[in-house]
Image 1: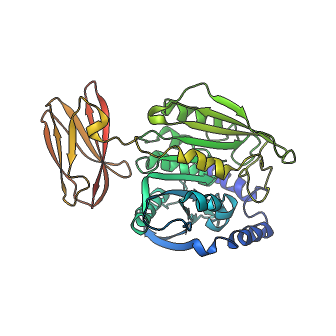
Image 2: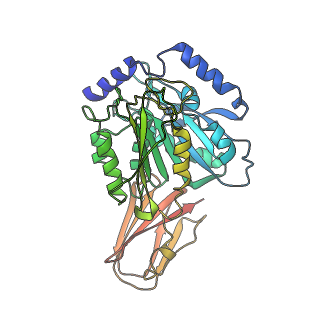
Image 3: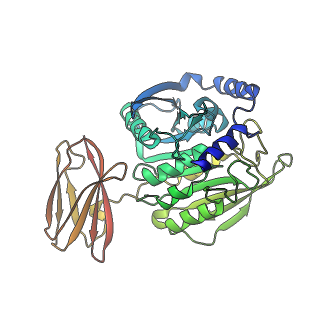
Length: 396
């Protein structure tokens, strides 16, 4: 417990904390209230026995006739959804690109600060909260389930990585600003799809150090992990971000690792001399890079990585497989699988959190699987010398 508590104290006392000044907080909230309050809805749901809060920004372009992307935007430690909505602001981009932005609120820890339980200190199940919240929002809005993304500042960046590992069947891509992962979570990461990742980090970050501290993974090691996982090109395309603001006391380099599986990429913005801050934010906290907008670059990255081909239909995954899954979507609890040949196969049924529910194996060419609850599920088929193929199944 010592390492996360040390981190919490560092964040609490850091000069660049979101609450370092009531004046700054007030200015942020006033800034955010002028143009967008009419499209912002505050709500709550029950999850894990707790009443959990969130804010959602719905752009004026949304009319309920087309599916739209959804971005979860997580606040940092000791911050909240009001501050993150303005500090890492996506609303003006959503107004033109037509996507929904969700700002969940963390729970209060033992020191009285809002946080995400990414360091295994508290008892709140934040991953389950986001899964429950996503299910709720899909009932209220037309959400493109192939375009659900996560990003966040600091502790919110850690949260985004946890969701990449534990909810990869629902998340298309993530971006972390000044966040990282703790070593145990990285070592136990259970991502099952390709996962495009963007990391934005300052070399002089004093809260989540660039070179790591205690059990925080060093940033370059983190980038290396994800580019290897996605099987991206190991040599990046490197460009210098134009130094358009010489008064911000830092510069930026952009690294792109392309050509991963299913088109996945890893991008890394290295802020030379930058601190623990969100580039392009409306206020300059702790050496903020002003040469680019983190929000704009994150959306540019996200919109390239809708998961159209990361969960592949069984009928087109492999011409030699020649399998079908039906009915899908289904109102029945009985799902049929049919293959042309009767070679040996292993089948795994998982839920939307990646948890294995049932496993089968055999040589028959017809299968019947019972899915009792309603929801989103995945059937993974493994065949000798053919690899694994995953089919999304929806039961209403």
